[in-house]
Length: 313
Image (cartoon, rainbow, N blue to C red; front, side, top):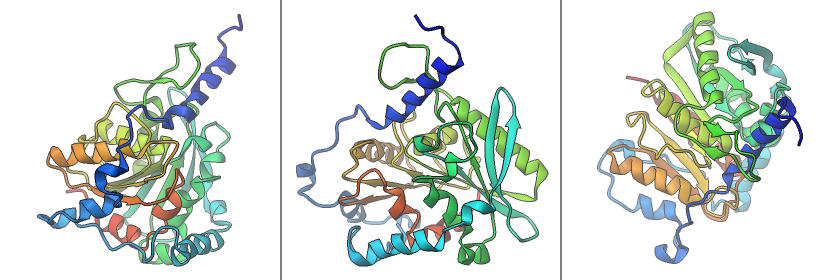
């Protein structure tokens, strides 16, 4: 039997990558008559302006004009990752993180980005790479920094964001447990360090993330309720949170209805639970889009304005 050293533990942690395969069965498309779920939700009468989703980019998700926005972003954002400085926080364990500091003075917002499983590790690089390029670079685009200069932090975890049971030796993904995850707990400590070090506006701290990081957004909202000014989870994998936590936090959730990694039902049920509890989440579901929904999310022209228009309290 192989000794249970750190190498074995990291191997178990990498099982988090598999957590996107949600156990909740996807809703049958026939139940919606083949219509886009987001169109169905928008068909209900808007009783509160908080229920009104900002206009989305024109064109169907896979239309040439919509895909052109994604291609343009890829070209415009090349090299922006180099504007992040490498840092570490030493707590219960060492958490690497990347920080972008804006060229502006005064109290400024902070965007917290939680990476997908492609960012797992401790090299302080992968959380800026692969699919994470969209969620880490969009805030740094010159036009966005000109409108709203902000700090951006991208912490890195080697054990996921939510809380998982890595003690089991059975194959497959680690079991999700209730409570704040190790990654989320350390990310909150990093945020608190930055709040003391830099002139960050405590009323304008925002949480976003995708896949494993989307799950982290739901987890971190529950772990520190009413702390974030807004949240943007993308295709978040399963956690024990039902979606109704930190109910007053403005939230815009995104998912692709053809996601084969995290079933779209996971986001649908969270959003439904939040609405049932009296919350006002926004929900955008893209027809024909798979797990890489972040490419559409972070190229929505209205997203940046919506995020920064939210203020805590």
